[in-house]
Image (cartoon, rainbow, N blue to C red; front, side):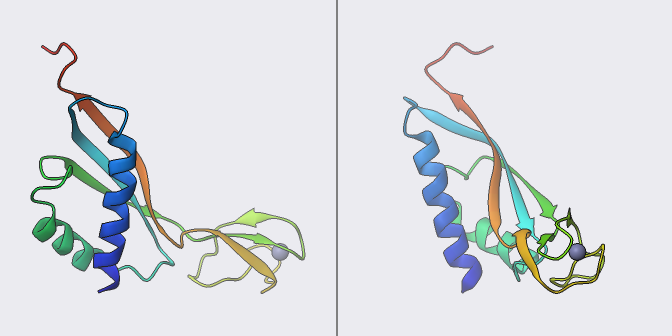
Length: 120
Ligand SMILES: [Zn+2]
């Protein structure tokens, strides 16, 4: 249930974001899914669909975007996206790289409407 625990930590992040508002409603959430994260996107969508009722995501439009694998190379110092999905420098071929992106589920954007503010 890796995807379920990801969903729970996502909810925690969202709840923290909502704290400053009086009566917030999440209208849209954009999630970045790391290509190297091992997340099963179909399964994650299913988890969200089944468990979002009663959470701030219940009525939100949820957008999933891919977050490509990115590495920084210790040999040539460049930063890039490997063509093949493995931790290897796309410029010099070195495996002496640090993964700097594409490993996680990230909340990229959260659009919040505060229902106490005037609306149309
Ligand atoms: Zn390199």
